[in-house]
Length: 500
Picture (tube, rainbow, N blue to C red):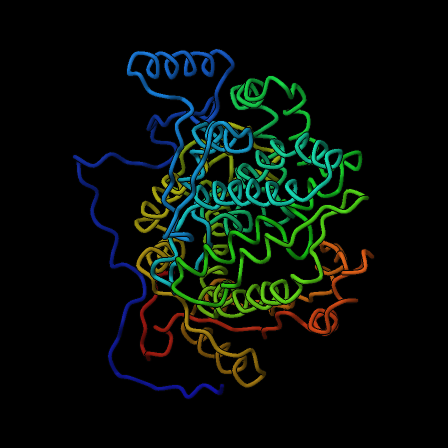
């Protein structure tokens, strides 16, 4: 797309007007003003052993005094299965794991973390949170394990049941390490040089939450190693049967992806992620070597899953506006970091100060990380709209009121024109000529670690060996989107006034 510059005579100011005169009744909220914020020494989302024990005493007393049956079925409404929801039977250990863990503060915290980064700016219902995804993943894992165990021989079933509570526990807690805003977006904002920070953070959360650990220890009297199994699955320990961790985090298909393909489709109002889930789950098996596989008769629905996932990336996660807004949030954090280093950032609580000083997530304490929720970030985003720094104020205002930069294909012609326009406006191109990187994702990496195929003749092979579609995927670019350039729409008006 070639830009045609339209010149108008009126003058529009991109940034807020002149700084208002200070009022006596307004408290100066600059960092050095002496405003007292809560510290980061502890967190409501982390329990000690004593706190967990007290909560259990209260729960048991309530059940006893009110005549509640602890073995009564629990029913959860779920947008992905509106007809029948999720039914949990406490008499089954896998369901009991979900019931117990979902009430733990560490899991409840995920209600305060949005699932998607910037999709809500394009798909108005895309504001769902990590909590439902975690519980949904746990329920799917329990369902899949029940199916797999039901068709295994007695010895194999015993082995599957040995690890099933741990697999469900990891499924429900696999995303507890995400931070605001918007999960993966938050990682890119605060820890730009750290890959998969949420996995490291989640491992720290579980490893240091004594209440969460005690919950796991007391869940199953017949399985004293449940906590050890959970930590080993999180680490993808090679001493475990491969199916235990491939169920949660294996390449290609896994429980995590099975849940979010449908969940994100439902909440974003699209059909891209839909496929025949029941057929897929009913064809899962564990091989004699302990690997996760799908029976050959279920290959067609596995092909549907790969297609659905590809379309979600193309049309939802990597929508042009989502990509531009993602880059704007990253630049917002970059500007805040610059201002804080220069001691010019007016509003930053102790947690934000620690975050802006950190290089990686390992520089931050667990209580500090636990507090990185949407309400914490939202407070700062709104406060920054009133910043004396025009760039921070402008970015915060645009992101809060949904005014993303306008995007153009990154062609030589567009780059030349946009560079000239931004330069003429006297703007810093680092912040006002955004370069959105191209996106490229190939399926071959996924397929190399994907679950296997159990053929009708009993042989075990790779997906691409039994499916022409998967074989074609192997050499295809699953997602390939070009680079973009993005600028604020105000630069297209002659005489724009900027405060620098």
